[in-house]
Every structure is written in C-alpha cells, then in structure tokens.
Image 1 (cartoon, rainbow, N blue to C red):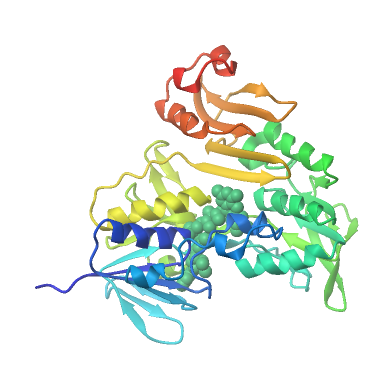
Image 2: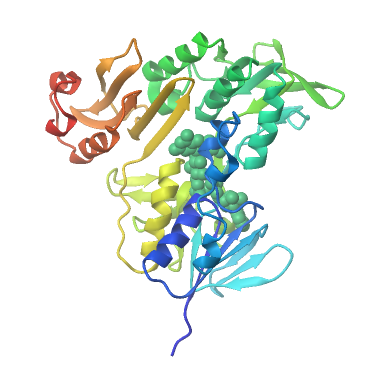
Length: 408
Ligand SMILES: Cc1cc2nc3c(=O)[nH]c(=O)nc-3n(C[C@H](O)[C@H](O)[C@H](O)COP(=O)(O)OP(=O)(O)OC[C@H]3O[C@@H](n4cnc5c(N)ncnc54)[C@H](O)[C@@H]3O)c2cc1C
C-alpha cells in the first residue's frame, strides 16, 4: 500500500484555510499541513479596516474556523512558522529555525504584503501599515485618541481607514498622486462619488500630490511633506499604497513569477506539484483570456477551494467573476467584474445616483463587463450572470429599474 500523500499549504489565511477545508470535504485522507507565520489562526482581513477597527466587531467573528476545527478535521495547523525555502525537485519546504516538511503537493497561499513607502522618515514611529490583526488593534488605539491623521493613498484601504478615523473624530487628510480617488479601481466618475462622500464627512483630499518625506520629532512622526513642498502636521501617517504579492518562495524556487505566481486556469504553477491561490496567484482567467491577479476576499474564499480540487485532480477551470465589497460610513457597495480603465466605453446607471442608491454598469461595445451596486442589495449574482453572458444589452432597458436584470 502506498503511503497516504501529504499536502502542504503555505499561508494560513483565507485561501489556505478554505483549501484545507475543501480537501477534507472532497474526501482527501492524507496529511494536511497548514503553515502560517502569524500567531493567529486563519482570519479574514476585511473587518480590520471596518468593524473590527471601529471596535464594533468582536474578535471571535473574524476567524475562518473555530479553534477546534483544525484538530477535528486532522489539519496540522502550525502557527508562527515561516516557510523560508522551497525545493521543488526534493518536494520539501524549509522552515525558519531549521527543519523541513516534505510534500506530495503544495499550495502557495502566501497572500500579499503592504507596499512600503520609500521616502526619508518612513520608519518613524507613527507611520503605520494595515494588514494584520495586530496592525488593526494598534491603529484603532491610535485613532481613538483623535488628532491629525494623514493617509497616503486614496485606494480602498486608505478610504476605509479615512472613514473609521472620521468616526473616531480625527482630522483626516488623504494624499493621492492620481487626479482622484479610486481611479485605477473605478475610474473618475465613480471614484469621484467616493471622494464626495468623504468630503461630506469632513475628509480633505490632496489629489495630484505625493508624500515625499516624513518629518519627525523625538523619533515620532510630526508631519508629512507633500510634493508641493507643504508639510501637513500629523501625529499618525497611515500608508495605504497597495500591496505586493508575497512571491519570494516561488521566485527563489525558480517558478514562473510575474506580478504573482503564474498559474493556469486550474491554479497550477509552472511546477507540476505546486499550486497557488488568493492574492498571490496570477492565474489565467478563462473569462478574460488573460492572466489576472485579484486582491479581494472573495478570490481567496473561492480560489482556495478551487486550488484544493485541482490538487486532487478534479479538472478545475477557475473562472469566477471577480467580486469586491466595501462599507464606508452609511454606504455599502459590491463590484463585480474588472472595471479597469480602458476596458469599457460606456457607463449606464440604474436608480438614484443623488441618493447613492443605484447600480452602475460598465459596458464595452454594448456588453456589460462590470457592475457596481451601491446601497442596492441582492443583485450581485444577477450582475455576475450578465457579465458572464457577454451578450449586447439595450442601454435603455439596462437603465430601467422596472426591467429585472435577469430579463436583460
Ligand atoms: C485591511 C484590509 C481590508 C480589506 N478589505 C477588503 C474588503 O472589504 N473586500 C475585499 O474583497 N477584500 C478586502 N481585503 C483584501 C482581502 O483581505 C485579501 O484579498 C485576502 O486577505 C487574501 O487572502 P489570502 O489568503 O490570499 O492572503 P493573506 O490574507 O495575505 O494571507 C496570507 C498569509 O500567508 C502568510 N505567509 C506569507 N508567507 C509565508 C511563509 N513564507 N510562511 C508561512 N506563512 C506565510 C501571511 O503571514 C498571511 O497570514 C482587505 C485587505 C486588508 C489588508
């Protein structure tokens, strides 16, 4: 009898934990080793810039599984353990502090890490990043004290932190080199709606400017200097300038890496026994006909299980429509698809834009390529089906709330 295989998962977060769950659900009877460099068992990151940051969500609500789940499902969860090397030929992962773990198949679910601000003074105390639960706890403490906050970057995390900081009563200035908020994500029109929302709540924006230096006093940050030369006084600077996929293990092992671990539609990397999922995977997307790396919660939620099935030889074609959500003040929204600049030639609105209760559809050649529902609920599945259908739609019917999305 051949020995039961060992599947190793590097990265104990959403994608990794969901992959382990799926392996067991699909009847995998071998060993599962789940390695995580953080001390926490797998948790979800979206609450870290929303309810958990604000102190509204209990810590128990952020975890992917109950503590007992890992033992109950015979998943060997090793926390505080960093994988430092990957030998594909020997099928071994090296661990910090010595030791190795052998694998038959490996999943890289190493996620992403905040892009660092590289300016003089960036290492001053009070210049912070937000990725881990401890970051969120420290940031919440700092915001609770009020004061002046400069946020570097008007992307999703920057804006969510801005909303939280305003709820705590801080003075908030957001510095962003683009001409508006969320430009790369939503384009000027809809990014502009988010900027207006924040302005109404007292946030000040410095668009078209970057932070060139942080100045301190007694080792602590005291101001952020903008490219215009102006220094903005601040006790806290939150750097939110995007994330970089954690690819070092894969790159050092000689796997194909370019903006993430290059994978096929089955989330298999250039090494036959190695797979990738979540933020770190740059996978061929059948719907788009190109490689796409998606840094969203739902991609970890769905991609981990897809990779697990692929590891089991189930013949996976991972073609989920990218999905994202955010909550800021009293605005909740979901986006389906990739409304990247250049990917659309028309935007059609359905509903009340003034009241911020509407759906925006991005179209290319009359075909819906992405959709965003703002304070309108239970429509994202239908929007995703419409994106998948790839058929031209009538713009007037698309704009008419009386026409069900399923009838378009
Ligand atoms: C503050 C915040 C708010 C967010 N809000 C939203 C939101 O509202 N909506 C949304 O759709 N998305 C949101 N996201 C994005 C979403 O959280 C990510 O897409 C998701 O966490 C990706 O999961 P992952 O499992 O791929 O990777 P990660 O969550 O990055 O986890 C990877 C894990 O692997 C570990 N690791 C890395 N290298 C090693 C190694 N060598 N050895 C051992 N362990 C290793 C890391 O420490 C980490 O724990 C948010 C992200 C953040 C940070």
